[in-house]
Length: 498
Image (cartoon, rainbow, N blue to C red; front, side):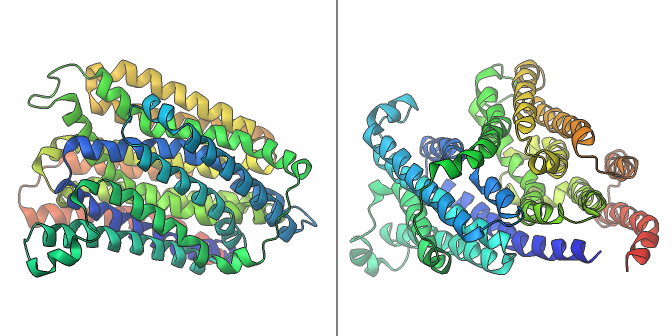
């Protein structure tokens, strides 16, 4: 049980910075909406959507390859670090140069013909992200969760503080809403026509600051480019890169298809862009599950590689996955039965009509987390191409179901397509994993806990309690029932593990 406790501690460290960072960034959303017209905000979202695809291209799947080869017997971790980072530096400089050279045709191709400056900044941001990913991976490999989380958190705080300074303080001073006597000073560096540009510039500066923050890791680096050495790592990593592309399709394509396929007047008083806004706003509440999964992945990936060498590794993997499902099922239950208390995060009543997608998306992301857990087998057996096939199968399901369901169900169809996609990926990955790397996952137990959580959510929907206080006590009681059952069933196992 000690290894599980260690994993929980590291997950908490990674999760704290991730949750706080995501929350602070989420709070910038209303700040932006108070300044930007919808078309301006569309530029931000559109360009950062492309950043998601290019982040995967710049990384080449080498972060996971670094973990895999660093845990091989007799691995020279310093040499591995030098060679992987040398390759990433060269490839990032090359890719960024290509974007900058062809920036005009690229801007026209992606439908942002007047945003060359922003695209250029984003190209540099992509390079810095890729280069710093390897030192960050080294921190995770060495179990330096506190330093990893601290640097990530500082980066977020710098970004948020700079945004608040520009888009709240400087904006209001310039508009003479307060401290009008400071306007001559503010006018020297705050230009209203730059209002979009500051977002990208702040991101660029904050990312560049990661280099001195990681200076101790960079100080040990010695340039050592060896293409022969890199071939097996790239062979291992490219299926992971393709998985990443498929994952971005699963995550983002539904929003593009919703805009294209939603029938006119499907939602009275809402255009397709308005419906997309409602779906996107409600989708943000599903990120509570995503945060838990991301925190777990940060700690889990190096943990699984390290534990693979232990005698009882399969039992450890099964135990970790069971508790992952228990915790995530509780997150799903708690948010789903208390949706009315999360409305304040959406801020505007026009978003409330889409809240039915939230439980579906929470459950979808839970299965995505299960997939990440059971996918360990193809990383440990160097059969990462299975991950590529599974991810592209998921992408196919996403495309087919969105095309079929959006005209009939609207954004509810998008949510169901996401759930079916991630459920199918988890089941398929488990099936093949039991053939090549058997792990005794307690499937019946995990399914029972998940069914319990779903049943309690249904109970909260179909038992109507009008009084505010009694309704909330009822909902908390449902969560309590889940926790009591977990304790009663798992308590004997916990005693034996001590």
